[in-house]
Length: 239
Image (cartoon, rainbow, N blue to C red; front, side, top):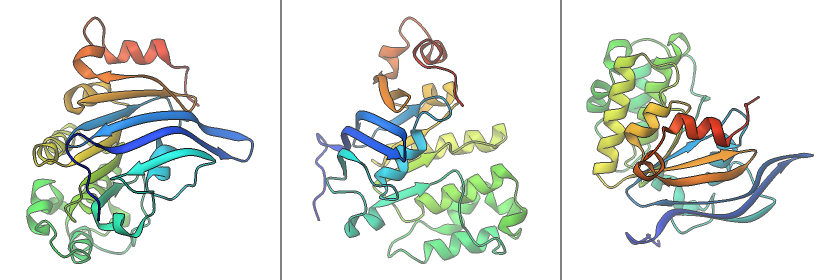
């Protein structure tokens, strides 16, 4: 299977258009995400962030434009084990205990991360015997994150990974994202937390009304102002 070289993007999107009936969710959007980097996707509610992730993972088909993920088209059979996906919500079995679910997901891969180590690292051990349906929002996010990375993916999609987490859990998640980057894993994450983006991201892509309106390395973008000020001045209020 083809593997991008360090100089090639792991995600290459050009002139992407996605529509739902009369609604244009992504409007000629273009972006690139580099290998071994954390790329943060920022934008108001309804800007198209989740639609973009769903398109990259093959769940939504584009009307036009091109999308290449690890050098392949979204949904290609070879991509399954190479990608990790953490959605905002999951269809996990509601009656499964949190620890059992992480172990089950680990068993789907040939060389997974050690599930017990991952459970401890993300603080899941404190609620490992609690069924998924009884977890808090932040606890579910921790389990979803474990499921996204337990298979040792090359590229991870994280959709608002710390939503609902308390400060301790958020910091554990930040540390894990940094560990992923240090191991050469590429990460694309969406977030509304400007501090989170500044702390974690190598590059930021700001989207509004389905278009990329600004992008660049965090130090360049924040040389004279903050990410929050850039966000406010280059986007409309979300829905």
